[in-house]
Amino acid sequence: MSGRLYKYIAMSALIAATSCDEGRLYDKEVIVTGEGGNARVTATVTAADSWTEGYTLAVAGFEDGNEFALISKNIGTIDADGKCDVVLTGIPAEVSTVELCAIDRLRRRVATFASAPYAAGGDTVRITASETNLSMSAAIQQEIFNTTCTQCHGGSNYAAAGLHLTDGVSFAEMISVPSVKVNGKNRVEPGSSSQSVLFMILEGNTSAEWNYDHSVEVVRQEKLDLIRNWIDGGAKL
Image (tube, rainbow, N blue to C red; front, side, top):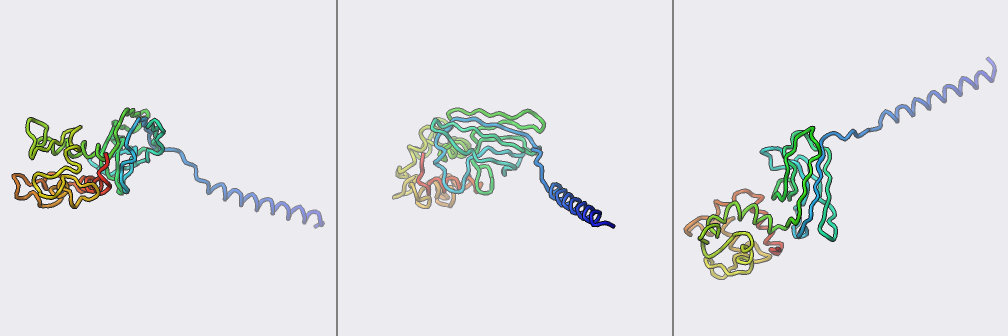
């Protein structure tokens, strides 16, 4: 065999080997196909910065009967006019509702501010929320006072202990206001849940000998944590 033929064979082998190496590299590429549905939330919001550490304001997808988000995305930047625009992609088929909400570290739903039903295979879910108060106090009013407390505290013609927990007046009657039931303590003492009668009666047995034991009312831990953290964070409105 001539020297030229040897050189030709060697060069061909080198090219073949290089081609095989490149082929293996391309085989390792991961191509994202973008499975799942989509949702878009546009909102004008206030008081988003009132939340304490451990909570996230997000757009999230929930399955029926499950308080833990299957998917979520932080609402991100809010502009000077209070506007935010969030696109959530890759929503699993199991999701039944998409919500503008607050979730805790475990992605457990704490409060819902706006929601829409979700069905896999449908069009993009769109939620528009205007003038939405995202504060911790608004979450407490909506998720606890309105659902649990107002029946006895101002929802009718009666307000036990002279305390109205209805929307628009509840916090003015609690924050730094002396309790009429526990001497020397305020209904809500900003910065100290342990010295706030509101939390004392919900979390412990302080009201056990009153006409009504309030510790049976708010039994879900995330709701108690919401009140505790709001007070310890300064009871901001």
